[in-house]
Length: 275
Ligand code: DGL
Image (cartoon, rainbow, N blue to C red):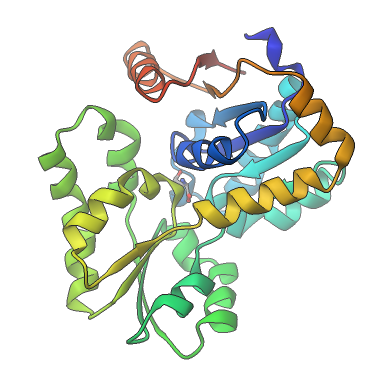
């Protein structure tokens, strides 16, 4: 365990590698921020779990994060956990500012011209009352075509980083074809894992469809929350930090090899298995 991580500015939580693009987006805006990331791989995939299981696993993962890294701000870099458990987590951990990641429905409603929006997420997110309320509140005049895609989530978590470009394209094609056949002019990436394939999806979708996600909104919100406390911000800037470590809660030796490779490629220190 890297002992430098006794107090991170930002901690990120997802079920696996999905939230990494969110951490990178934040780090781009705040290069000196001390970041740590936990993928709760022992409980992957969250998107196929019941509400109770998601609540339970997420609360345990947040406890672990607080114990290990005592972060000033926590970013739930997972739509499934956010739409299911955010309120509960905030009530269990009232002292910790928690920023959630929710599907970019509001943005999609602004971007669409023909009012046909594709919503690509996990089954848990697609079916959650929270997502339905977001749609009702912000895209009531649009037709939303939802698709839960656990196969794509699984591919990204397990095979994406070693797959060829052609294999990646083949994997996103069924979702893109579905949204095309519905006439959508916007696709929301409502699962953080999908942000790894945002560019490929945009290539496959072509210029008539805009592929959007919430990286920009979430990193801006996290920085706003963090900056609301001047003392915290000063501490972050005064102490340059070897950071961006990626930890997981479980990995077989071959998975660990892949995580190490991914970290190397993204220039993120591999943290190890954290229990
Ligand atoms: N990356 C997560 C999300 O944004 C969930 C993936 C999963 O564990 O099913 O929903």
